[in-house]
Image: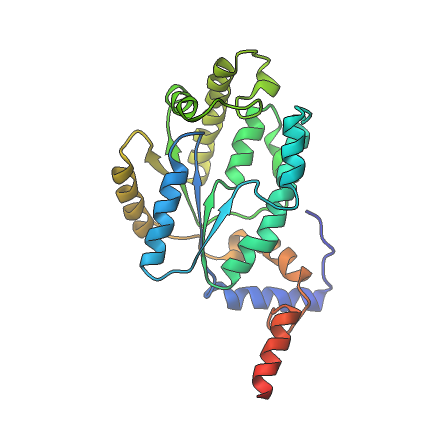
Length: 272
């Protein structure tokens, strides 16, 4: 996403605001993996656990932007999405939700639990034949989570689980790129491509890997242990500066980073 860069003074103000807020920010935990790997179940259990220990928790779901999702659904029904269009619409949905859901929650100190995140795009779009650099550019400025739980599963087991739930759709089965008429065969082959990309991303970004063949209880116990042992990203200033500055620059410029509404409410309280 491109944005008009603020002047030098405003840029310094925003960067100083970011540094001061970093110690109070929330954290983002992403749950990634192929279809039917159990990530949604574990995300719900993790959310309940976080709430039980006193955190305010917000859920983010991939491609659920109310602004973009209707377009994606209509284009999917018509089988009229090219890999490039699918990527760009997903990037627009991600940016909309990042600015309206994720960053406001993190700025307020809440925990954001993501049912799929940016790595979903990297794995699936590259599996569709797109160049990784091109996909990354579509999502600029990039925003990375603090921790990523990756649910590892073979394509065969993932495909069997997914089919037991429902018949895979045209795009979920990858028929738009495999040219295989049988959705079951296409789904298994496409999942193999996606998992190959996930495995590569797991090594690069040091995912917290969960054996998705384990029982629900065993997975949840392991996730708790890994979460408590791991550390979040050291600071936004190191990982997510451009994305946060782009978001801050769209706010109305109150001295402490509040929106215009928040600033008016603050003044009203002070006047009482």
